[in-house]
Each structure stands twice: as C-alpha cells, then as structure tokens.
Image 1: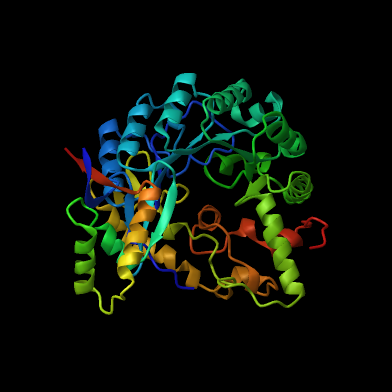
Image 2: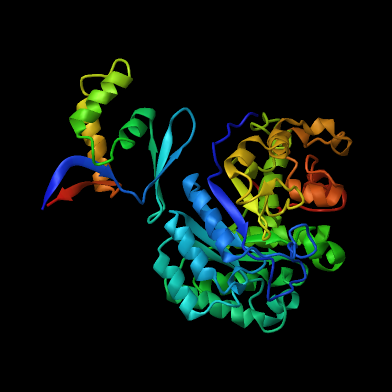
Length: 369
Length: 94
C-alpha cells in the first residue's frame, strides 16, 4: 500500500522536558531512550517553533516528562501562538494552577489538555501514580474546566485499576460530566518493562478488561474511546474473527505491517532536541533541531523511509506469523512495542497477536456483531 | 476611510501546500481547515493587497489554459467565501 508523503509533517510531538514530578510505575518515558538528561533552553524551543511556522506545521503536542514543570511554559506557548500553531498538552494534571489554566484559555489555540486519571478514587489512581496525586489531578482538571479549556482524560488500564473501570467511567462521565474519555493499557515500554508482571494486564486480565469495556461502551455509547489497549483490541479482533469466519476479503493494507501510519503525518522531538519518528521510537535519532533542516529530515531521512515502507512488508515474511489463520486480516500492531519486545521496529508486535492471545486462553467479548 | 478594491489574505491564516499543488487553508484561531484546488491556491497567493480581482483574472488567463467564461464569477464567489469566513478582507485607505 503506497501512501504519498506530504512536504512537511502536519503535526509535531515535542517533549519539552524530560523531567517529571511523579514516578508512575508504568511510565513509558523514564528508562527509555527518551530519558535524556538535557532539557533545551527556552530560546532553542522558540527558534524551533519559528521553523514549524515557516513549514506550515499546524499542530504541536507538548509532552514530557511533565510539561507543567517548566516555569517558562507560558513563554513557550506564546511562541507557539505567534507562529500560527494550535497545541495540545499531555499532563498528569497535578501542577496546573488557576493562573496557568486562565493563560491557556486566553491563547484560544488550545485543542485540549489531556489529564491522566486512572481511578475513581485515590486508592486506585495513587497505586501507580503516587500518594496524593489523585486529588491534585482532579483539581487540575476542574481548574481547566472552570476556565473553559478543552480537557480530555486518558485512563491507562493496568492490574490495579481493572475492576475499578465501571466506577472510573461513572466518575468521569457522570460525576465530572466529561463528554468522553479514552483508554489504553500499560505497555511494555520504559519503567514498565522492569515490573511488567506486576503492572501489565495478563491474558486473563485483558479478557476481563475487554468484556468490562464492551459493557461500558453499551452503557455510555460513543463516550469511551481507544486507539490502543483492550477496547481497541476487542473491536479489531472481533472484526478479524468475523471476517475470517465469513471468508471476507481483507481490507486494504491488512496482512502487512500497516499497524501505524504516524510516520506519514507527524514527527517527534526529544527533550534534548533530537528529532525522532515518534516519542516511543526515541532510539531512532534523525537529527537535531535548529541544526538540521526539519523538512529535509522529514522527506529524506533513510530511517523514516524504512519505517514508511514497513507497510509493504507482508506478515507472511515472519516465522512468528507462520500458520496463522488471521494473517490476512492483521496489521502487526505498534512498531514501538514491536521494538521493545523483539529489538526490531519492522516486526509484528507480539503483544498485539490475536492468535497468541487466544492460544494462551484469552477470550473476546461474547457479542453478536 | 474607504476600503480598497484589492483583497488581502488574513495574515494569521496558514496556507499549507499538500499534493499536486492542492493546499489547505488553516485558521489557527478556530482550528477550521479549507481545501484549495490549484487555481484557488494561485488566487490566494495574489491576495496581497496589490492585485484587483480583474488583475488576478487576467493573470489566471495567462497562466492556465482554457479558463472558462464563468471563471470571474467563480473567483468572486471564492473571495466572498473567504471574506465570510474571516480568511481575507480588504485593506482600508485614508
């Protein structure tokens, strides 16, 4: 499947800091290749935002680390606004003050601030994110809402909050009256790798999470979303099993490594200014901002080309996929987890393997599509 | 003060060129995006406060082959749409 390449990325993800005030047990940042000691000074980021403006990049996502640890965040946001960009911020929510929330609202350029909330109560949220942080995160969210800043919530599902999912949904959608929230699950990245057996969902947990989320989706139609994790897997895998059963023609691109199209639309930058394909592929260094031309890197870097061509690699090339009845319908999943699991980006992600999941006793939700 | 007859693009709006000379106009204040075909891109690039609409049409006829008779109406409609959406305006002169 050939996809055409835009002259410049439409969006850029920037880790404006590698520092964070929390030490979450499944943090994908610390202990990964993104965990670098240096944070760029304000002036470097402002120069970079000028380049983004010149290249007609439309959106920037600020992340870290924790973006709100930077005292110069308002100055950075002014630079973003000046260069005609819109922005999102990914945050743990604990450092958001009224003053900052008012500042964000006044920019009129904030698409959303995404706050991580993993539980309906302190005990669940704080189990992985540290004591006292549930109340701080909820307070941060309330401040944003009060000032009219668009706010979203991401729930990272893990062993400690699995059974809290119905209450989490009630808390976020009914009590806090959010329009929706998104879910994923603790992935085999960063800190999580060293304690995966305590944090990551087991096969039985994933089955349970899928069933719970499927039921919650019926209760709150259209208000729980996922681009990864058990809810996404439930939808994709039920579709795959049905397509296979009905001997349907596979959809375009399936049967190849087409699990992620991010490299066709966006680029990422580490907190030390090194350009990378994605915040989760930080070991792939492509150049440095304000030294290397971003447009040139985007269009011509051989590592990006290699990732963009992964969609042409048939899953049948991998012994891992041998004899899999679902092969024609599979995408191979996320290249970043494929890398942390196998050491190769251009490999199917074993954690996204339906056959493996079922062979280990996994069960999909009992539904009739 | 009176408005000039030379339309001017809103300098806050981003022209992002994509494939085959197509482009999108992006208004960062609203997040709205509008698709432009190659002729609209040509027109947008001449909304500089120096060109009148007849001058833009004249340049268009020199640049593109087989410009239809109704092109002038289409161009005026296009500019009216830009004006309605706050993507362009007319400069005032004292």
